Image: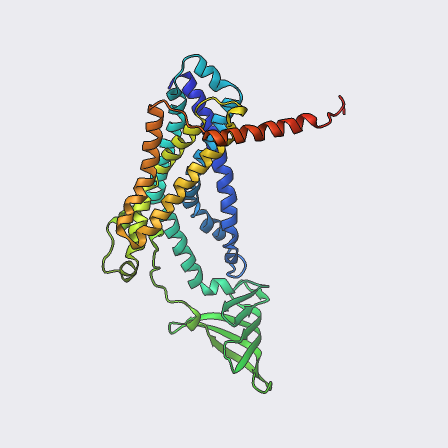
Length: 393
């Protein structure tokens, strides 16, 4: 790249990285809030919470990166235009390909990043999230031994302990069992241990009472005990391999599907749509970069619809992505619709290049351009009529 190309590339890259960082942080926070039950209801440590939510970052980057390209291209080109740098470059005889080259380079680089993310990193991260969440559900003992918390370990079964000793003993046990529709049981004990015996997980309580209440007549009976074993084994989910969704499988697993897998047989259309969507993902950053440049690559004044050009670029990008989503949805049921998954970004790329090669300029239709100019004149007139503040105010 020459000096001008490096200058534009540097500005676009800074804008892209800033946009990607901010958007990823915002989306990550919103997604992390959905997993707060790992810390609250499930009693997991904050480190496990951050690790599990952090594994989803590659998937979030994949979703956000193409739109970060759009924002970076719009900000860069709009700033160059506002500072009259596009006018100077055009007046000096520089072709618009010199302006397009760094913007397109950003799109191609992000497309390569998207290929890495969508083929391996994003599904691998989602797969590890699935495995971690499965392990959290299986690790019941670690979930319930959290002093001072009331934790629902099953529907209608709530567990609480006051303290946990260094020897593994627990004290101040409250176990409320509301699962039986005919009666409820409340276990209170001064102490106890969780032990493994004969392939069973038992909560052995000592020096306590059992309060049994019959729902039909409200009668209450209390039984005291010196030692009582409550079986937790039926609450422990069977440790089986989790079933991975199409989005949680790498590109190699989607290409070589296990035909004997019952989940694959039941969701063959979803796997087909996922495969084609993965292969088309790297095309969108390139298509978006070209679409934005198509609208904003030429110097424009405010009277030439600069704001409308920005809106047109955003509308073109949104329509292209919605069309891609629509084609992917249709591909679930209709195999022939998979052609549309590739056609949308390829048509956007080919159409943009064709217009650029023909040296034509994208502009609003004349009636819309006149309407935009009239609105601009009206706003400008209203601003001029506003009373001006005195100097120094």
